[in-house]
Image (cartoon, rainbow, N blue to C red; front, side):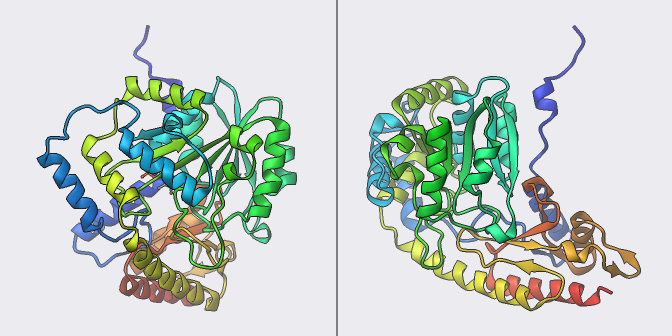
Length: 399
Ligand SMILES: *Cc1c(COP(=O)(O)O)cnc(C)c1O
């Protein structure tokens, strides 16, 4: 046996968004004035009442192993939230608490995928989906959507993408990177096909609270009994409560799949951090006031970026409805020249923006859209203002 490594592992790409965040940090450490639109996490601090719950847990010695799939009071709080907010009934034994929603997704695909099973992923998509599916032995099948479709999967496109090997569909609403939200009617049409073709739907609802207009968040599992049986709902506290570092995510699913995921997790990681679970209990079960404050701020930032981008030539944007990202079509920039050199690609555009204008943007090739960039508005309004001025200067420099 030679010293080879896993073929599956070899194909995994490092997360480009985390790499961009690291690059921004390195440039700042050198003293450069960088505006980073790369952030994938709220810039707000975890609310004090949640921190206090964690401190209390430590002081009271809640520092040992817990049941592998999470503590009962937290499962009860999640079950109550599912019922009251999402109108979905998941009992305690249908809930698994994991080390972040990313880990929940890993558990889900480990539990349902056999080698070679296909998973339909509408593009643009969150960049970790294909990697998580591939690592579980599945084959990502991308279905590109268009700006005219508001970057949402249509039932026709879904039906066409399904083959005899399709095991699941991933649905992310509100979406990272587009900020788009599926309406109840749209979900009904998709659910019909999911049920008719008898596949799973993995519903990533991590941005459910971060909605800025009149749209409502609808959990696909709430539509009817048939789709409920086929849905695995994935969620977490990272985005809603500004708790990305605490690492708590959770799923609601059938008992059968919950049991499997619990067993998988019991061998791979054991329980999620006991102290973070107590903090999550306070986050989900305690006062929800801070969400409204955060939403107000996000809404103002979204409007600011949207209006500025609308005024700029060569770039196009849809008004995002939720999450904290703007997804911008920059394909008309490629033919333009900057200082005599043709731009040609989002990577080149991102390089110029970083090196000459001190702005970090995320090229969306890893999100399945190589002619778009993503700007996060999880940074302060003053940073956003400065950054938009710089992007504007870049755009106006093009010939
Ligand atoms: C941030 C994010 C997650 C993962 O969040 P965790 O911090 O792992 O809980 C999952 N899905 C989407 C779409 C995200 O943006």
